[in-house]
Amino acid sequence: MNLRDLVYRLYARRVEGRLDHTQVPKHIGVILDGNRRWAKASGGTPEQGHKAGASKIMDMLGWCTETDVEVVTLWMLSTDNLNRPEEQLKPLLGIIEGAVRAIAADGRWRVHHVGTPDCLPAHTQAVLKEAEESTRHIDGILVNVAVGYGGRQEIADAVRSLLLEHAEKGTTFEELAEVVDTDLIAEHLYTRGQPDPDLVIRTSGEQRLSGFMLWQSAHSEYYFCEVHWPAFRKVDFLRALRDYAARHRRYGT
Image 1 (cartoon, rainbow, N blue to C red):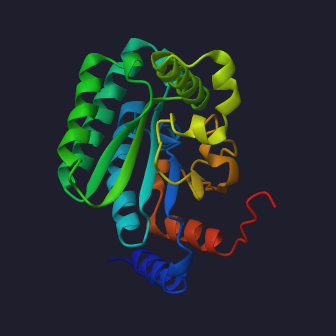
Image 2 (cartoon, helix red, strand yellow):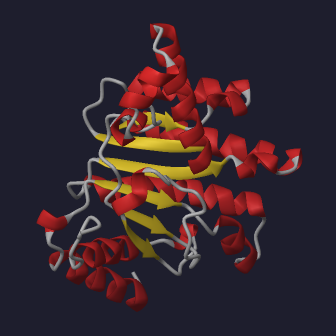
């Protein structure tokens, strides 16, 4: 171990030692940004950047397991990403499929897909479904893998699901208008039944949500980290938790 690594470990332990574990967020959303820029800065290819980012996911979930985090949502592929050229999209989907399999195979986490399955290739859909089914019995952190996900699309899908459900029941539009509210719409989101994210982390220095969990993040705290996702370290994670614990959440009041 060189001096730099030793200093880093000592600093990480110091930050962790000062962390208030009673203030740890129950649900963390993560926008995994900066894979391509990390690869470019490192002299590598975009594919190498995405592979490095996929490997970092396992580290992140391990760190969450060491705390009292109950739900983690990882934005791995947006609906906008699906418009990339085939030569870029195909290897990216392969890397995502490998990451989802690795999460499921670990045995500590329960996988849940959030997104629109119909916009994904059949093989990717099958991988996501298999990961969900094989981890359904696991009583560990719930890991939402956001693949083919868009915040506006989620709300549109929720409203569509709500309308179809009540159409099957024979509910008239007038009757539905009388009962529809935010709670009813929330029951049809991809994350229905889950707590909303307390903390949303975005790496690579970009300070925007880009449509991530638009509905659920109404009262979330945000933490924007300068480092690219593949370079995200445990100390960066601990800093995010420390920053969150120091905030006074008002929930709009």
